[in-house]
Amino acid sequence: MKRNRIAAIDVGTTKVCTIMADTDGDDNIRIIGVGVAPSSGLQKGMVVNVNEAKDSIYRSVRAAERTAGYKLESAYIGVTGRHIHSVNSRGAIAITRNDQVVRPEDMRRVLDVARSVKFPNEQKMLHVIPRTYAVDGQEGVKNPVGMHGFRLDVETHIITTAITSVQNLTKCIRSVGVEVADLIMEPLASGEAVLSNEEKLGGVMLADIGGGTTDIAVFKDNTICHTSVLPVAGYQVTRDISIGLGLSYELAEEMKRKYGSVVPGMEEDTDSERTLSHDGHSVSYRELSQIIGVRIEELIRLILLELPNADYSRMIPAGLVLTGGGANLPGIAELAEQVTKLPVRVGYPVQLYGVSDALHDPAYATSVGLLLWKMRNKGSEGWQIRENGLRRFVSRLMKLFAK
Ligand SMILES: Nc1ncnc2c1ncn2[C@@H]1O[C@H](COP(=O)(O)OP(=O)(O)OP(=O)(O)O)[C@@H](O)[C@H]1O
Ligand SMILES: [Mg+2]
Image (cartoon, helix red, strand yellow):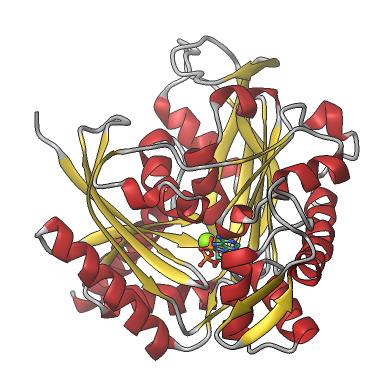
């Protein structure tokens, strides 16, 4: 069977991860190459220094190419940052043909109506995700093609992004010789990698705690109903440790990763009064854990405030799933359970076939999810479809003028 090559680049605030894979067109993805490089030139998920970001992306892409043994042509790219906004929008059309059967072109027409919402000029649509359809008022239809009716309604989740942020990111990607196959909002990707269908059906909140941002997505009735991005994540935890214990940022980061926990004495066999020594510096384990615990507790409260409905147990009975590198802190799920009174678990990305061992860490939820999102959401419109449409329109216009 012919297999197609696919790839994803997750340009994070702390690391850039490139995954090269092939697929038979379904969910069967085989990882062929992985390249991870430390990231620079990014702040809170956005490019702030093009040359530095380019360099990190270059190193990650070349490392993945070396394992895969072929050149990376194009890739799905993750987008995050405070500039991303989302809204739920409805659209309705009449089916006026004699047979009154819904056809694929009606689905496109109704999506056109739903996405004609007004948003600021500096924003551009990133995703138009059909959540559910209704035919003649009959709600909850997943695929109306072939159904009879006079009226077709759609409910969509629309995600928009700042044009300049995306331009900076795509410029970096193209400058290392890689085409942008599509842009995908990062929490959607992470959701694909760590959530089960049962969780998405019942109602669940996902928080990807990265270095610069915490990306949030809420799913209910198997569809996305809310997405947002908080500019608080692992960076703030490390900065608090650095200030609180008088360490350099780099040493505070090492201490956090090596010994960090959210509650002193989380593990039975650890002495909460012990002193930790590293690189000639000594810090108290209790103090380190207390600083981390306070910041993480505050972050959990901020995450919960993003929920569009205050009736948590009804809205998200499956609770909260924490992922991203920040979810590696021991005791984080237990602390979040105490704060939210909801079930909480740490989400690891689904294990994919191939050279994927290094990816079984919450930090790679977005990277793995970028590959899965495109396989599983063929109905949703991406950035590239519209960009290509615009390019075709501009080139037609230019030909017309040339004549
Ligand atoms: N074992 C660990 N213990 C504690 N914290 C960790 C651990 N591993 C990673 N982290 C933290 O996770 C954060 C990085 O997470 P991740 O790799 O998901 O971020 P990113 O994708 O680069 O950034 P972003 O998504 O915000 O752009 C850092 O703040 C890092 O300190
Ligand atoms: Mg990330």
